[in-house]
Length: 384
Image 1 (cartoon, rainbow, N blue to C red):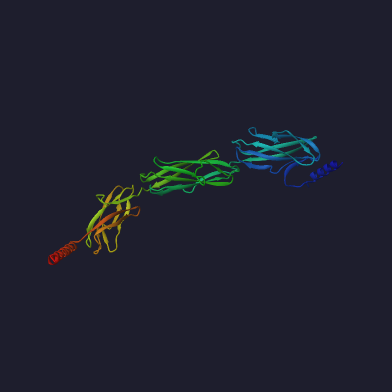
Image 2: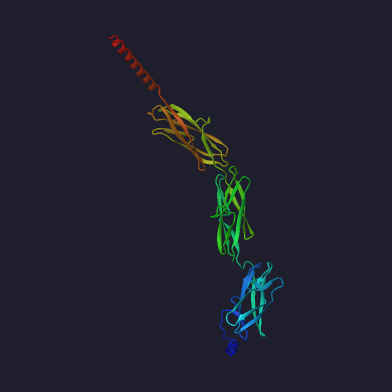
């Protein structure tokens, strides 16, 4: 009696349109309902869609199910309890759930409507489900570098950072490789996982990849390309990075004979020739020679500044080194530096301060006086 009254009330409510809203579904006069929370969705081609269906009756009943309207190349299957099903049994109290799995082909486009039909005891309800297929509707994966080109010399390394953005609803794996010109080194590191060769890009997250490029030390000035390929979720993202090499910079400071020693008297200038060689592949400009000298020592240089030294060329500079006038005879360590705008080098030479002629004569005189004095003492007092 109660069930009949309830069915009557539901029928009246259905007719008057006073049923609660909030889910999409269908209600039969005998209390059979078929609902789903999201009856219209937009997806990307090549994805699988799952609709959660809820069936309920006021009395225990068997409900037969059917699916229609799916395009010919689509696949729509009802599943329950891990199996393909064509009917469900309700208990007249709680809802029974069924899942509709729809495989959307990779070439699918536009809208499609699939209808689920539920039949029980001569009563039929239908539930239309709308699927709109749109490219990248499920989110996209992007791989972007922070810089596409860098500029500098060949005797340093350069790092490009790639950002992998996974805006799809699923986690995907990713790897990356790089290749440069012959003789160059390209190291690709998954940030935070230096030893890892692959990583996982979480759904809705970002990951970083560092690409360290080391040019060949003898690379000529010019523009070079580095090819990087990031593979994310099985899809390849080729990226071309550029390096503009201005050349390498390297100076060597020595002497024409490679002998790093000199000598001269205290208080007088001694000429020492230095050879500055550019061992790089690009000019070094504004080269100046300077020295780190003992207190009261002086040095002047000719020329004082070299405007430019071409790659592979050498230039001589004459240094006039003047030790302090009161410098004691002996060896001193002097450091000279050739410094350009792009490179520099230093050399240490040993400078021997020689005793002056006057000092030597005075020393000899003192020695003669001392010896003469000793002889006079021996002769005068030796026989006593």
